[in-house]
Length: 442
Image 1 (spheres, rainbow, N blue to C red):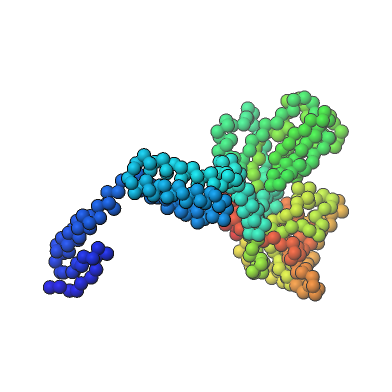
Image 2: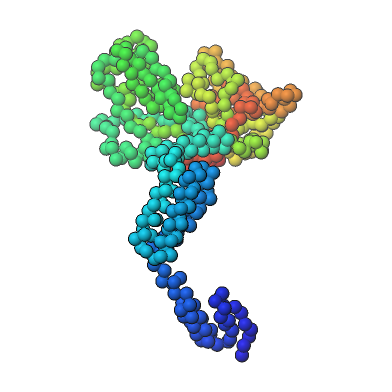
């Protein structure tokens, strides 16, 4: 029984749907056979003809797109070549089609004499510069990389750590493949610096640039050695420390021929990305790791660690927000008279080891040495952060503390961080991969 007609194709054949599936398939087969019989040219069109017709179409598009750039005589020539190709196709003259196709193609290609197809070098240079512009845009407005040079946030985040091996008899740097693997996974780089003759230290200076911490040691023969760590970490290397003791007591040489200057390895500080967007939409939260610049912050002074004092950006734990009164009663941090309740601050106060067994030190009041200025000396001292800045001045205050309180230059020394100093919260630790901190930062 017929259910209702519907058009099956533009060929004009009407197929009626029936309940019998076989009848529908048979009707479709008959339709296809009739269509192929009536339009054999469309089914069996030779390749040369298809290509020639495509060239005609492409030449027409070329005229439409480039007409404003083409000289009038060139337009007339292209139109003439198209007419010749159409005539050759209609005459089914294969040789003529090939010749007129070649002429049409050459005419189009030479019509814009000033146009030159870019070579691979030009294209790659363009891609390179576009990538740089995009990266700079991301860094300026969204995410900024920050390399942690010091151990002020350990064990939450690592700075550069020097490990000496000179006391291990027969120690030598591992083979090249192991060094590459250790650097890729752990940020570990090996050093084996030995005095080739008797040497005396003249100076030890910071030679850092960009994201790379460097310490340059100059000797009395005008030679230098560069160690890839901050100055304060270089001072902590036992061989250099002993040499400086000899220098202070005026004993020479500081290093005898064959003495190790530094044998061991340096473990890179964590490379983190800083979120530069969030603080435009929310207030900073107590307990989060954050990065700020040091504009108008007095980080200089006697006995300050030069690698921290010279930094233009710091990373610390945000321990106080505007309106808070901060007080330290070792190992605890008190905010507005009560012990801090934020998870990250409690972790520091607990003095418990982290997942790798490195303990937190708790919060400490700094000890005054050599005229060093501090805001705290004992538990009786406190600081209140300004929450009501003068009209027109964006001077709301925040308090920054390092998790490694005994080895951190922070707000206990130079006071509060102003709102205009804020860069953003530490977002993610990118590298090294097996430092125990890879991933989102708490």
